[in-house]
Length: 235
Image (cartoon, rainbow, N blue to C red; front, side):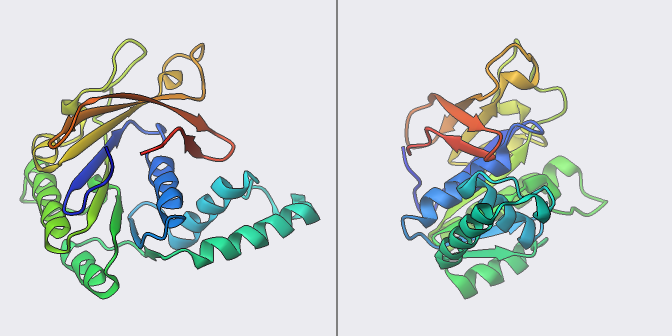
């Protein structure tokens, strides 16, 4: 278990499984332990990432109008915002090239880099999408090795990968072949409730489908919609 420097961890999941929430829960847990974290969010801007962290830490709905918030809410938000500001986190505006990301890493020297998400990197039209995404995943792995950091990369599943009777597999990673080959660890998120409304809404399975230097297996996590946060993430 645990996150090891020089390694690349790929976290796969279908849309609405909670990949970003998983990454931000990790961010919160690790930042509280003094880790230096860089988030390359290709999907959300800096203010959206910070808002998500605030929601996670307070449980207060910050997507409603500010006039709906009580004085106590505002007091709590101010207090928690101060704590988050003290964390050693660098949120990039979204670096869409490996070269630009490499430059930021060399300036900031993070312990951990989080990329959200792999399929949003642009590729040249002439290249086949599979080969291009595979090459980007290889470059991210090399970046982890070169700077001796932990690389956490979020990845989408191909469409229709899961249903209520089918748990995810490695080949469900979109444009997958090289992604799984380059990764040291692949974790797959599966939320049965998305396909079966009679299932437990807060239950999420986390399958370690590949682990180059350790065991594979399954962990059960709890996901709290209100906070957009995972629990039982002990590692």
